[in-house]
Image 1 (cartoon, rainbow over the protein chains, first blue to last red):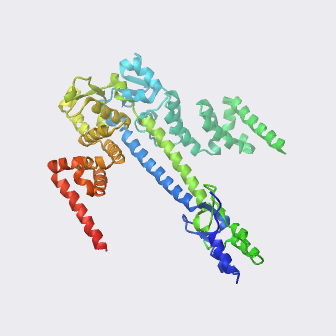
Image 2: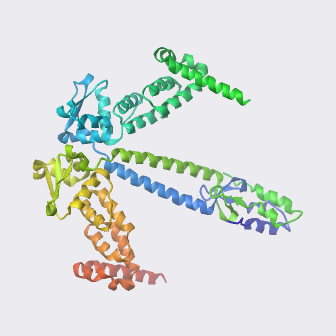
Image 3: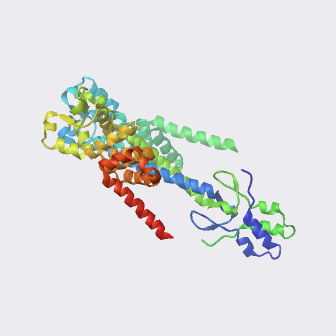
Length: 258
Length: 258
């Protein structure tokens, strides 16, 4: 498109021949179509056409979001307890077996987790007995886990997010694992950084690990005072070495830049 | 925010004191941050700040869409045939019963349709027999219907969209009904307008009915030549009267406007 002439400028120029005043120039102050504030040429953003196209594009995106939300609510299944009458399998926490078993549906477990698929498709104990025993998990965590498989929702706090992430890793429910990892990243701070770093390493959460490491590297001056530091040195000194190696590597790079 | 002065205009004004030329004015031609084309004051859209905010907002919307898509794919269940081994109910088309029954899961049917819920929760024949007989439906339509309850997807053509909409209405699967209605609206044209209008009336599709009527009112000159017209006069003359009443009503309003 060839450059267009600034007609408003011309009209100002015409009047300036006789008398140059601020009021002429102020004719060139523009009003933003979005915030409706005035702005000058130095603060100009887009042309009118692009503004209108952007508005239409945003409208389409919002429409797509509405469609997807209604699809999610259609596909969401009610919590397993509400389906107890049609359940064909139960889950039991080995260490917390006083509570009632949690009812579920084989075809749903199979579709959500490759591990359950292997258990229930092949002729294993779980398939014959209709009972799946889950070790190292509390009743509440297991209930939240099964509920997530039906609804893709969970009311997380830091502890539940960690517990569900562990189950997500163990039963290869990737969507749940990502859901918990995002929660832990959103709640990250210096107090949690070292424990999150070790946790992320243990359960193979690349993104959580790199975010935790970034927070740690921003607090190297108080690293050894962090209450989790001594514990990490005992339990996993190689991870501590990795922190120092990354820090030193970065120092040398920065020094090299001067 | 108080109006800001147009500094670029001032710089032009300063030079114009000595010699007013087009080149001074051209300094005021701006470049759009979006399409990167030049534009003048008359075509100005937004200020820089609003352009940047709009970009961030669009980024967030796209991110939300990605999250929802991954949630949809997590919640989608595999087609019932792949779950035959865990199915606890079968659906059979009464008029097309040579084909194999279609396996399904009670808890899924119950969660998707209030009609199936009533059948399967109460002690009705279907619950005891584990067989649901569906009348006035072909095997292929019923298979597509059951598949939709698991996946929220169907490969529609005009005929299937109508057949599934009928089942959506009969079994109160609102999401399916809307899905088919949108398809029929998207494919609307003058040839289909009258049959769609009658169909929408019969199955209570408000939006499809008003879109069909709008298309009909745009073709009043050839209404009686449309091959579906005579049929509609025979089968549902009241609907034809409604077309004429709306048309005349609109004519009188327009006339009143002059």
